[in-house]
Image (cartoon, rainbow, N blue to C red; front, side, top):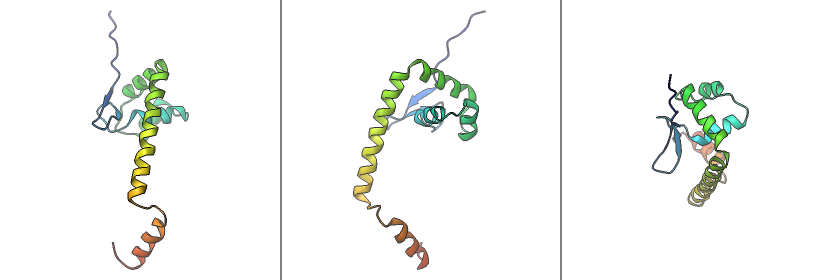
Length: 109
C-alpha cells in the first residue's frame, strides 16, 4: 500500500485572500474558529460550504506551519484595518444608526 500526500486545499483569490477549497470561506475564518476552540466538525457546521476533510487539512497545515500562517493573518489584519479606515474616511459612520432610523420613520427606503 502506498500513501499519497495530501494537498492543502487553499487558493488565493484576486484580492490576496486565502480561501478554503472551492469556497469563499477564508483561511482567517477557519483559523480564528479553531483558535476559539471550535473543532473541525463545528467549523463545518458553522460554514456549511466547507467539507470536513478540507478543514482537517487546513488545520493540520496551520499546526505544522504556525509562523507562516500567523504572518499571513497579521498582514490580513493590517489590510482589514487600512480598508476600514478608507471606508470610514469616505462614509462617516458616526450617527449612522440615527440616520437609518430617521429614514425608516419617514417611510423612505
